[in-house]
Image 1 (cartoon, rainbow, N blue to C red):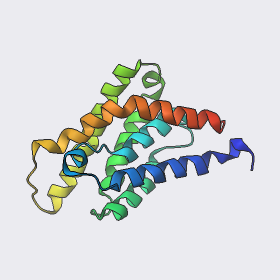
Image 2: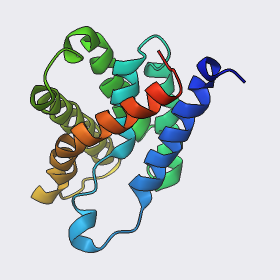
Image 3: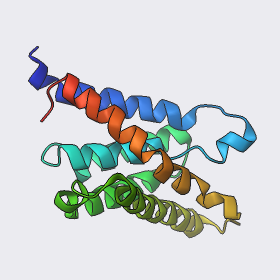
Amino acid sequence: MPRRKAWPTVVAASLGLAMVLRILPLPIPWSLLNPDWVALFLIYWALAIPERVGVGTAWVTGLFADVLTGRMLGQHALAYSVIVYLSLRGYQRLRLYPLPQQSLWVLLFLLIGQLLVLWTQNVKHTHSMAWTYWFPALSGALVWPVVLIALRRLRQAYDIF
């Protein structure tokens, strides 16, 4: 298989790794900071190869994440689809921003995703929410540069353009 044709496998494998990182059992203080790795990886791939990774990919990945986490079916699918849609709307601008500014946009996208998940949880029944609920969005914005650099190197290693 030529390397250029490897993009579906590489993207799927990276999203699989993101799902493993999402459910990784961590001690309590660290679990509060565990970012939504799946959303971060989807944002990266939507910015890097927008013609190949879009809202449909985000929807299917979200359904897998719902099954994996035992959440209401469609909850993460909706959040990831909106996040990727917003990423695709401004991908040409976002790719040109410096890393700190990109991290702020990623923070906004992750906050919107968490707000959608919270909203869908409250549709079913009211949940109380601690202020620590928003920590994963902040930690996701902080690790965005690491995700960007790691996935960029992976993309370059497999000639995915």
